Amino acid sequence: MNHPVPLPLEAPDTSFLTSGGAFVRRTVLPSGVRVLTEAMPGASSTSLGFWVGVGSRDERDGQYGSTHFLEHLLFKGTATRSALDIAIAFDSVGGEHNAATAKEYTCYYSRVRDADVPMAVSVIGDMVTGSVLDEAAFDVERGVILEELAMAADDPADVAGEAFFAAAFDGHALGRPIGGTPESIRAVQRDEVLAHYHEHYAPNGIVVTAAGAVDHDHFCDLVDAVFQGAPKASPLARRTPEPVADPAVPKLSVVHRPTEQVSMLRGSQGLDLRDERRPVLSVLNAVLGGGMSSRLFQEVRERRGLAYAVSSFAPAYLDNGAFGVYAGCAPDNVAGVVEIIDAEFRRMVDDGVSTDELRRAKGQIEGALTLSLEDSDARMTRLGRSELGTGEFTDLATALERVDRVTTDDVLDLARDLLTRPTITSVVGAVQQDELAAAIGIGG
Image (cartoon, rainbow, N blue to C red; front, top):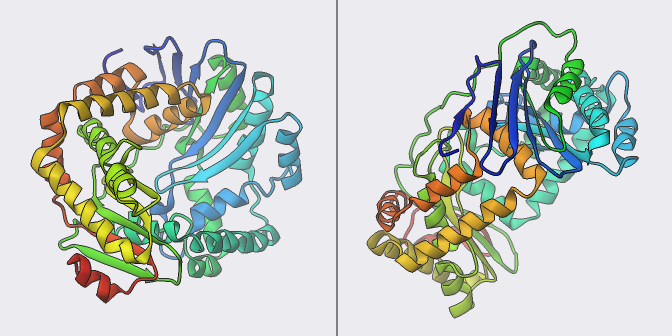
């Protein structure tokens, strides 16, 4: 395979062999549920996930935090199972089960022995389709979520991350925190969360994926049984992009706290999920801050000892993304670390990467991609994100080929676009905004 495989919504059945010899099949059930499996030869366990194409960006005023709230509540019981029943079902077979809320999707997932797949499909399916959202459980879980938010608020890196995204996507739903805020969680009512559940958890908006020891036809029968009685429907259309306004000027967000170390993010808006330059970005990211041999790690930590942790990041969404650098350092070192980051950005814009750096970055990326797909969880996740996000499946050989085609000129061109955009900086720690703004030459 040397090109992505499209996953058209109107195609009821699709199947293909990946470059690694795994067999991928996709079936659209009469209810509109999409089922994707990847059989891994020699596996004796299965990773499976129920995906819903709703994330924090889809919440309306009065619902903020509802998507994450639902993730918690669906574990609290259905008409036929209590919260304890759900926990016992997986604990008694040594299985794993959990859930994750993101900005553009929610996933309820499990990993079990192949013999226990029917149980996992039945239990998670019951959670997704039959949650009662009990009022007493709602009030209890509100307190649990507030504790979770309080735990995140005690982590300066989390706070800096939220401040960075709020500034990068100011006025856009992508800028809101995934879990809501303490104020929105205290204010949200059960009726709003219930309405959010009924609106977004319809069968034709759900994708079910499995990777490992899985027989596609049998797995489809198990999933079909979960949605028995659902009306016939076509799959829900995929998300359409919503433009994000570019920051017109650099931004600085400082949260003053009496911490021993400052957490800082500095970067800009990035590339969206479908941007053809994402393989180029992966190389740029690897060279700048993607490992212990990266420029920033070597300059900030190894040569100058200004930080213990320093790395770069590049998340992507349907209509935008972000790129930046994280560093944790002493308050007196913030301005110096910013100076180094900016100097490395300028060096990348002026000179790009060397052929040796390009070779090492490609080796790092290609090795990490290959190793990650030894895990059935990663393959299950790839299926879900492919279906809900880009609408095409990219296998390992295609991904490696895209990285291998990247040239030094490609990296230089991207750097001159990406690293010259208005800079967003978020800082949490014992620093003052005015003083830092003056030191690094940026306005608040």
